[in-house]
Image 1 (cartoon, protein in one colour):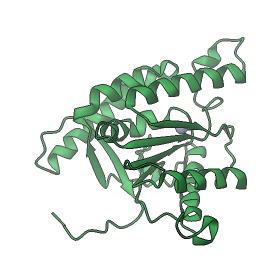
Image 2 (tube, helix red, strand yellow):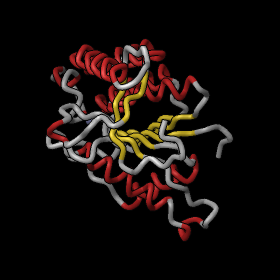
Image 3 (cartoon, helix red, strand yellow):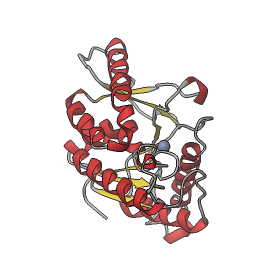
Image 4 (tube, helix red, strand yellow):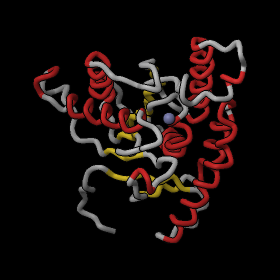
Amino acid sequence: MTDKKTALVVGAHSADFIWRAGGAIALYASKGWEITVVCLTYGEKGESQKLWKDPGMTLDRVKTERRAEAQKAGDILGVHEMVFFDLGDYPMRTSVESLERLADIYQDIRPSFVLTHSLEDPYNFDHPEATRFAQEARVVAQAHGRRGAAAAIGAPPVFLFEPHQTEQCNWKPQVILDITSVWDTKRKAFESMDAQEHLWEYYTRVAQQRGVQGARNSERKMKYGEAYQRVFPLVTEDLV
Ligand SMILES: [Zn+2]
């Protein structure tokens, strides 16, 4: 356990956290938080198109390269710890053992918030499966009978990443995080993802759009944003 504030990011594939939550990670890391990123798979089959253009490519080599890339991007963003579950992607299937492993991580780091995928994604079944898994592990970690009442976690809010095509995923931007101050770091992190170069400009446009919308919905002079949907109600005594 740590004295520092912590957060947990759970992604289905090894690069998901960079595109979808890299701004939040860099922002909170810059404030001294310890961010743990769990990559459930390397995206070795479904999200490594460029590597598979090499006819001599093997599954093990793809995994090794994707892991190194994710670690490098995590280092750029200031991730405290990268954890790779290697569950296998397309299709991704979870086990009770892996659920207990993630629940242990929740209880060990006691995150103040959790970031994961949208609840639906008809283009990618691993993403909502990762969300279901992350949410179930959160609830398991809340159980007083698991490792005793002192180990049980509270109720960290869960924020859902922006999916690739929001309308089809029934996802709405309920929170827009101003990531202008760390934009250069996020961009640098995703430029380290050589296998997915085709997404660099796309995710820059997404951040710019959310930046404009963030400014429109506030008095902030922000240029880049990262949007999230909430799962649970915001509990506050301050509506301003
Ligand atoms: Zn993915």
